[in-house]
Image (cartoon, rainbow over all chains, first blue to last red):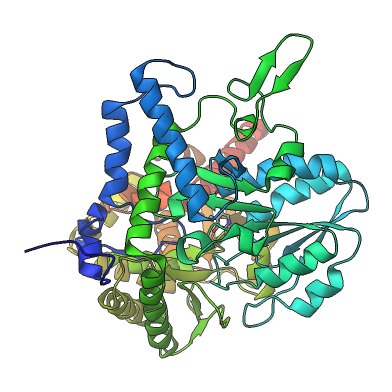
Length: 413
Length: 147
Ligand SMILES: Cc1ncc(COP(=O)(O)O)c(C=O)c1O
């Protein structure tokens, strides 16, 4: 008899059954999906939530008085409650739906930063940021005259915290830091960064693109001012994400985009803004994906992040040991605390060639600079091969990758 | 007089060669082999102006116009791209600008390598084809102005 007691024992074979895509073949080989840091695959619960929305209660929200509109609105707002609990936000209106981390960061840049920064102010980021946590600040610096400062990264891929404390001063207005690095896996000491920044009078934004799926997120305990999430990296659909912001900050910020939904009253002379969170959700939102995002969080909660973390840590340790045993292979990112990202280069072999040959064996990895070019420059490389693991991956799959890798290296050298 | 191979002829030739392989492994082995055999470009040519930048790998290419025909030489930092580049050179080099501009290069699709053309962001191959054609059209324009 089959009862899914997922919350009791972590059973990877059971979990795999929830992900239909894992059954497919690539180049006539079973798919080994190790590109989870780019986007995770979706459980059937999420896929069904998405199609059920369109099949049974598609309607525009917050406006209609008919039953469908009511159901759709309830489902949309239920996701907000679920996210609030998921990251332990104090208020539901602190959860703003966006398209993802990129939009969340841009929202803060174009509303909070644009109105609060002036020439001479400083923004601190790190040397391991994704381009989406670099470029918006460069654009805002250009507009306001603020300066961008960068916390350097050491050879292990950890932040040099002494340098951070030196950079921090009364001119620092914002510190925006990646919680866990997509290229290296490094989990940054964000609590230390937040506490020190607040003492210096600076706000802190965390890029939670990689951390949300692996770590327990408690924004009140962290005390961060802003936190950004992409659903598609948390087993949810693409096109939906979250900006968490402290209520007082969000209330003081001007709106990001103008349009329907975000207004209270419109006349040609003056328009007043709607209250939070709607002030920041102009236009018809991405209802279907928002509704399905709830299914992803529910699924994740049911299995439990703690058990998943344990499983992923085992995979990471196993993969790291197996990779390091390969002649000429060098791990990039050896931080003490890591999420399940194994980034590496192989002497004399181009990462792209490895990526193509691994794909031939059905193994999907990411190669290149992972949208972190300054970090690659720091290590003096053009890119890495990155294998990143999720709850549904197995040691057997790592064996397939290692075999494929050895075969590829032999061919390429 | 020996007949000069047309672009079409060389494309057919390559398609025939690939038809002998029945696995992806063998195809890529062959491409890697061609990549390794491609005569390297002297360092003086590996400069910014000759660079065709993809997102991941880089191709350097130079061309020369002699007796009404275009001759290409190129190299890449990635072996598989180098192998693909070597095939493009084999097909296009030594032909007139018009022949090159008219070439459809269907062999890439027929040997199952179309994905390397589609991934415009991850390698320089499509950019390479464009640059080869661009050079040909420049030579063609020069020819017209001279005549
Ligand atoms: C660390 C990090 N930040 C930001 C992003 C951007 O996320 P999105 O493309 O979902 O907006 C990513 C995704 O690749 C990421 O890994």
